[in-house]
Amino acid sequence: MSRVALISGITGQDGSYLSELLLNKGYTVHGLKRRSSTFNTERIDQLDVHPRQEDARLFLHYSDLSDPASLSSLIRDIRPDEIYNLGAQSHVRVSFDVPGYTADVTGLGALRMLEAARAADIGCRFYQASSSEMFGSTPPPQREDTPFHPRSPYACAKVYAYWTAVNYRESWGMYCANGILFNHESPRRGENFVTRKVTRAVARIEAGIQDKLYLGNLDPVRDWGYAPEYVEAMWLSLQQEQADDYVVATGEGHTVQEFVETAFAHVGLDWRQYVVTDPVYFRPAEVDALIGDSGKARRALGWAPKTHFADLVRVMVDADRQLLEDERMGRLVRVDR
Ligand code: NAP
Ligand code: F7E
Image (cartoon, rainbow, N blue to C red):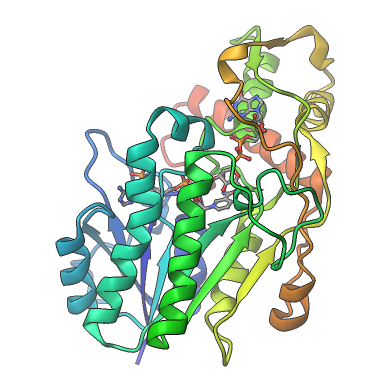
């Protein structure tokens, strides 16, 4: 019998890679997709398994993390072995503009998923996509026992979701695992996160269709890893005898400016000629430095990052160059995004 997984956030960066991973492992995958006025399945369209096909193993369902009734019936009907809660309003800067919505979806959404799973009483395992943003202003290196000091509505919501998952483990004996994920990126990263904003701009500037790149604070340090490797850690976290919480990180820190320099240098351009500071991208409270110690995940899960900073930047810039070329040639299928 094929194992069954339910993924919230299946249309996002991580959801798309996790779907591929689980389908390759033989799982039947159900994804929770929210209603939007434009198509939002671009990242999983290449999986293209139509539910009418006899061998279909990928199914999408309309639901929403703000709608407890729909979550309950979904979990009751699907009876998943594993639930991955990746859905969130995940943009830190935006969370200052929509704090209530962020708390509802990113924080309470996790509670709603957990409560629906508990009520269904099906013994499923639960993964919560927690964030290094929870450490906020606590200096690096950060690991599982580092105190949280969140600096945004997003980070506060993630702290709530983190402790709720721990609480369901301790109170109800449910298998709940938190991944404390440090920044992870890929060609599928949303276009308004800094890495993708930069790599997309580099490709467009090289092609002569953009002349400036407006950015905020270039000083923060981030620990940037490669998203397909981080979804491996998610799956591994649910395959252990005991549920636990794990930092997932490369252990390498780089400033935003270093990312910018490396990306422009990859196509032979000097970033100083193109980058303009725009305070609109500053945050009311910044997180200065996040660098994770993933020793526990390495020991317990046998997980280790493989892609390092310079390769990550190169992969992302080259993917955006390819994407522009595909668009120019009128190619419609972009399976690598
Ligand atoms: P992402 O690309 O922004 O994807 C977020 C997903 O959540 C999308 O599928 C989105 O749907 C969905 N979503 C948003 N609001 C929802 C709602 N009300 N109901 C149901 N689904 C909703 O994020 P990601 O980078 O893949 O990250 C996955 C998870 O890991 C998130 O929880 C994020 O906070 C967390 N995380 C990410 C990082 C990172 O560096 N990437 C680091 C730490 C933690 P649409 O496609 O319709 O927008
Ligand atoms: O910003 C600075 C910005 O938005 C990184 C999410 O996946 O990782 C992500 O959150 C840094 C910040 O990611 C711009 O001020 C400068 O210091 O790419 P970001 P993030 O805030 O680190 C964590 C772990 C998550 O959990 C989140 O879900 O870059 N920065 N100029 C900029 N950032 C953006 N977005 N845009 C700029 O123009």
